[in-house]
Length: 153
Image (cartoon, rainbow, N blue to C red; front, side, top):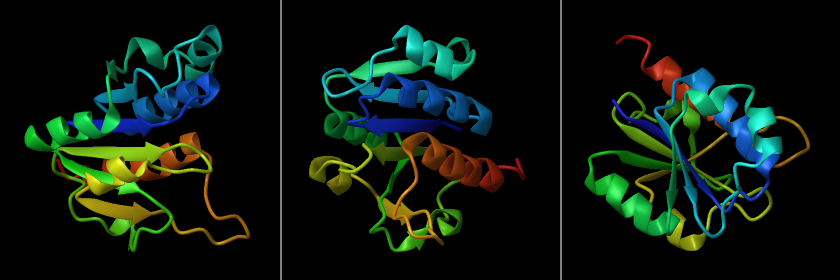
């Protein structure tokens, strides 16, 4: 089934490239970025993606909240990664269904409108002094949680 990575407000091209690489590794079927507040596929992004641009379809959308609504209506669970999320990402039970993981910009996280369109909010437990991971590392951790949940297929 569908497994999308949706980036809300991630503007750094190198982060986009690293996200694409991690999305490919986890088996994502596509990455969604906003046309206005989204990183561009610059040479730096392509280099950071290490070849993943040829394998992971990228959709540019007018607005992330509207896209999340359409993704939900198409039958995907929308799971937002948020440090305030009460469920550990590896405990989310929806991951083997069609799913879209939403990741916000570093520092600010997801926009309020994007957060409101999520079916569930999950977090990545942090065991050190820092509160969150870089967006590409978070994509890897959450993406592999999805890959693990789907292993029985």
